[in-house]
Image (tube, rainbow, N blue to C red; front, side, top):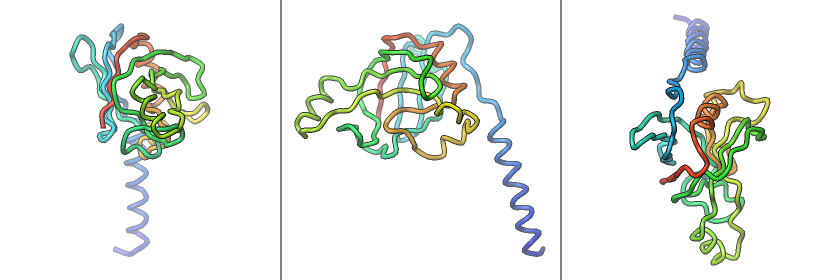
Length: 173
């Protein structure tokens, strides 16, 4: 087989594989489900949604640009770790829609004060930047947020509808 044919077939198979990845539908949340607990595993890039103690769906996520370790100060591009609550819902976000996370908590504030720095705030679970929703699942290939948790627009739509303000979220390393 010639080098040109190898390159040609590699490109064709790559395009087919990427197309399948892009268009293959993800499992949807059941209709009218109430998600009452969320657990995030940063190292696995997973967000787990629970209802009445039962795992309902696992989402693949992107995190802050420097995801390893706990968020300490504003601008460190880390996603916080600990127990928080959903404290806001914004249907008109610059990132499609978002769910606000109650960061910083008292412990986070205390740690940042020791360092003489601000904690930062506005940590969210959100979709893709407006007008870039066509990227869909490809956003998962790297960590790109400023410390938030990113889903596709379709995923934040369903989670947004299923989560109430006050829902517990635990973010683990």
